[in-house]
Image (cartoon, rainbow, N blue to C red):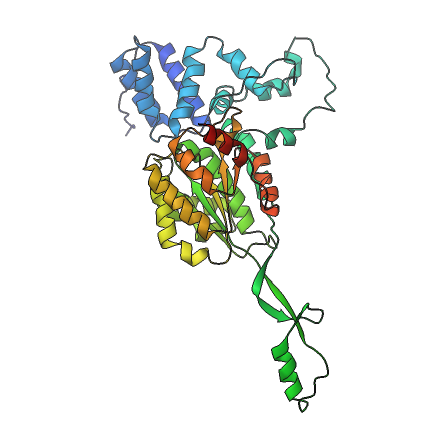
Length: 420
């Protein structure tokens, strides 16, 4: 018996079907789940909605090919390059092919733009590289020995501007980073042959064994103890790209031997606080972050910094902050809750911690100023305020931890805050 297939009511114009199919293929390469079923649904939807209005056409395809909030940025860039920009091929080639540094002013790619370019030019750049004889243009040799290396460029590239390949390489670099810290001097003492403090109790105990005769003085010194590292990472929609990179970095720190930390505690917060410490103990970083993502149900949602910090102070502060812990606060400070609640939570957090270091990706902008209510409430109650948008910024944490007088950008921003 011959197999029967359900007929598809497709538009009569084969060019439109071909374009939608190619557009779906580009979305699939960019990471969206644009399978054959969604392609068929998109073609049917376009046939019903029509092709007369651009806004309706965009909304129709977006409804068919996107199912999560993080898909919208990639879809918007692929749609713009494929359907709207008449010079999309030249524009995408300029995004992907190497350019001479300083020859022209480089425009930074918008979020997800490189992923869209890679998806639409999937195989084109590789073909040009593998078959240079097909290119009839004049070849120009440039001595680039003194230009910036790829690793140096990657260190200073914003996490939000990275393509898929660049983010994968950045994760490999983050896995090799270390975050050492000097041990703290504890109150407890221990016996030491070359100690600086006399141990009178042990001296008298030894003397009683010899009939009360003191032959030598016992010495002692203070013990060294390792502090704990506590990370509070914002996973709201505006922080998703930075949070994933920071969590890769924290996984490397948590699983690195001899890093100088007693324990590494990690919490995520968006609309609620989630403890993901046990997930970071897994050796495989992908499995660890997958488990952490399943545990934290508020990824790329809203932001309630004040309520989440209040929950941390109430439920976790006394458990993990009693040994001079250092707190890394990764957030942009854009909170929707009451600023008074946020300020009270920050006061309590600073009193409980040895140091509070705030990493804010908004510092990548030269004209950044503390104008948001959440930033104004948090800034006076941190010890150091630093950028956290690229690998170089994360490497700068070593300086912030090794020097107690490192304030980052806090002093400059406090002057701006007082001037207002």
